[in-house]
Length: 494
Image (tube, rainbow, N blue to C red; front, side, top):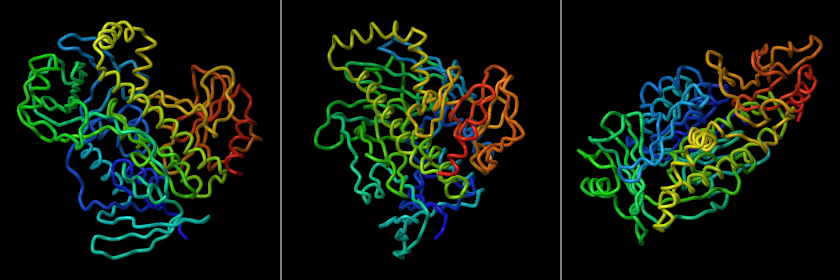
């Protein structure tokens, strides 16, 4: 038996999973049935919370992604030439106050380079044909491109193998939800005449359906448009002339498409698996949840699934913590987030595709006022950037005293400080107010679970214990070090 983890699927979610485990010194093997990587752009948005979490990986990963992408700081919502709302992302408390536009193929290439630096190379052309698990591990059968069969044994397996996940099917889990009754198309184009600078994107609302323009680079845009009610087969994507006609009718005017780089058409599925974990097998990314591309959060949610699971697996497989609550927490934490992303993206899609003319008039009239309200605008910014993702009902949450943050909330990174959870061991971080002092000499915190020393907080008071993924585990008043010690010892002792 080995303490290694088998990852099935080498897209961005599988690569993020492998990278996190590898830096935590957990042996990992990653396989994918595809024989070569796609060069199309597919997912194009990386949101601030994902960049915050990837920064923990080290090696300048987030900086490298940012250097290759286009930073978008403003969301415009239009009806014809009229701007209904403008949402700025610069007020979000994050080192990355923007949406990063970067083709998925480039994101994967950068993740792959960082993974290979850690000695892990994905095996392409290798498919999972079956598996069985017991209390000690997972036995998997792999088929190589040349037909060779291989039986292998691992401590755990993670299915990052997409919406048609063989891992999910083998587990017999239901994928509940619906397929929306409309067809959509998207494509990448060179264009001119965009009335906004390259750091702003636009959603154009129209009676025929929306058209959304994401700036990938100067003069290069992703265009997504609704095509209308579905028929038996998914409608093919429009030609260049067809996309031009859609923009002429729905856009603000003056936009000219020059050439097509890539197009596809699709239907929107809103589905979520009933359980993210069955024994020693876990699901992440599209294998666990699919939804509308509105908000551009699918890839981000999947990569954050990987970050959530990796530090817990690392603690358990390296024998640093034994509490069953660690691995048990993955499903309720991430399933709740997945459900909220599905609901939010569905609401955005339905708001953009209203058919009733009176409802559209009300939407267009009310939107400028509602989004102009600071609390509403802040909620939209937080939801889009995923900086308001939190775990209020997590089984890992400890106590929260009456002042300050609540257990399960994200703790914003501090500029100039080492990110929470950085390094080769997933450790918790202690943050204390000016009057809290240091742990008493007689107090013995579990050294393998906590970063050495404490970090001062010149603003807040009390003692905060922060998880390796940057969420608050517990918070107590000054001097209550015994509660911190009890929490950590329960985590380690089971």
